[in-house]
Image 1 (tube, rainbow, N blue to C red):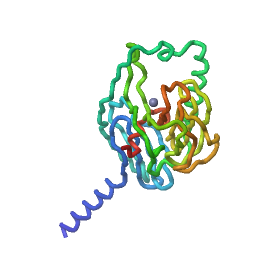
Image 2: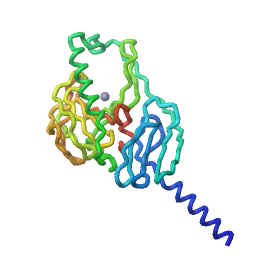
Image 3: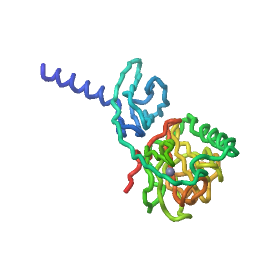
Length: 266
Ligand SMILES: [Zn+2]
């Protein structure tokens, strides 16, 4: 009898602990998919996040995140608090000298244009829609590629430290068809932004977005719903690109995440 009661208690504890699951590593730059009981309320670092009717939520960890993540789950009036450590990463630092100054600092006459581009991108990334596309596994945007740039790396150009690189660069021939990595809705499709050239942003719901830059052709329109794997345009070298390549970004609102945390790259 005592053993029986003991087993019941163990079972209940396991059940309680299993009420929440995470897919993804608690590491700098990671995208994390959470699953809890339907109708739960979830807060990440005191920020309320949406939960789908089947219990899914999403969040991500900044490149330089140091603090533990505090996850609060309220289900039927019970509060559960989970504290998770975040693994640190080391990022590549690359020095490039002898570049023409034009490539290092944009000329003043384009400041307005850059400001406007950033505003449009920021707006698209701030959307908090109830779409639940983000639950699926992401797929690669290209079949054949060579990775030429990684997340978190930082360049020191002509002795000046630049912003870290927040994307993954895929080298492939100009004109190669590019695929949507996840079902989503197009929230931005611009043919010619200053830095990013032909640019597309997809909303995958709950603040999760992907961005594609340096596109040659763009075959989608704002407001259009796109399926994972659908051709969205072709790879190019538009904007400030040194050669043909696709640079992709993954965001949780304004938090810039490592796309490699959701892809299987070779
Ligand atoms: Zn890049």
